[in-house]
Length: 190
Image (cartoon, rainbow, N blue to C red; front, side):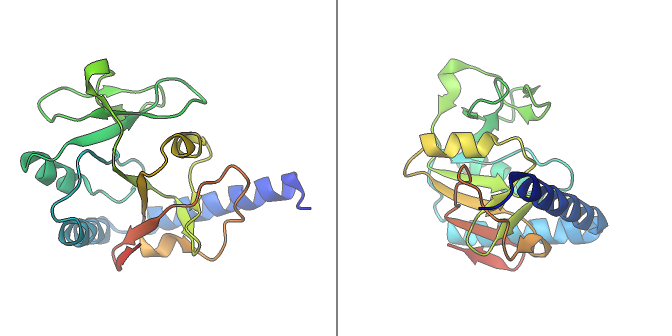
């Protein structure tokens, strides 16, 4: 049986390595790779199902928000996650570029918590710090998506990351939820 301390150290080391890798990505490559992902996703999801969950990128995560704007303009319901309380599942609220966003409990940009705009997305784009070949995601360690996804059966999940963040094995734990696929600048895997 794996030693929990060793597993925690292993995951912490992976997180440090992936954050470091992402910091080395030039601004030009970040923009080019992010746009390439938008193009791939736009070609695949035509027309996109509604509502579709995006994320507000932080710390050099792939920026696929241009696609969010394009789909919103085309009439697709676009939503973003919101941390409403620590250690709880995420909530998803419809996004409108004309309504000023707020910061959620984690300090991330999100739509206001309006009960009339609370939705269950059909597909989620999920930012990944790393992802292994079996679809297990390495996040920042807060567990928000791991708490959320079991409550959303049937919702398709797609990890979003750069190809340099693909890993052989993150050593998934019992609480980790396997994603249905992933997108990098090199293509979409479902």
